[in-house]
Length: 220
Image (tube, rainbow, N blue to C red):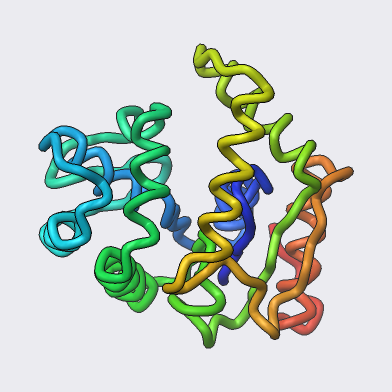
């Protein structure tokens, strides 16, 4: 199952809930890019250095388990969520060699189990033949509000104006990059979560799953 959409649309929250309801494995592709970005920063490398970033992406050993991510054997779940890593991750994610390396790792994971995978090119590039594809979106103001609440809950301080500018720039970078830009797959169903609660979005997504692959079968 592929869930794509812009930053702040709620992809991670919804994907986790869906994976739990369906008994699938949840794959946070954004965390994989963040892990590589963290490694680059620790090595004091320029995230814009395409050759070095591709080398790191290829060499990285990334393991995903419910709620955790390990990089080269180290649990980096919390370390990858700081603003510096987020900024670096958005820069390395536009590098074609890095994306190719990450796509190969993502496909390998998906081939081993039934998964709910979220990101920005899952339904278009990583798993174009996914049984179910959803493009999850929300209004820009709502996406900023959600991300602001999330950051403040973690004790991070950022102004709403600054965050809005950062997210607008990330949207622009994601949608205009030459390699695998953010886009809705032709066969993906569009889901606007702007005025919906988390439970409402999850139920709406489950209805899509039932329509696409289960002929009305109910999930727990």
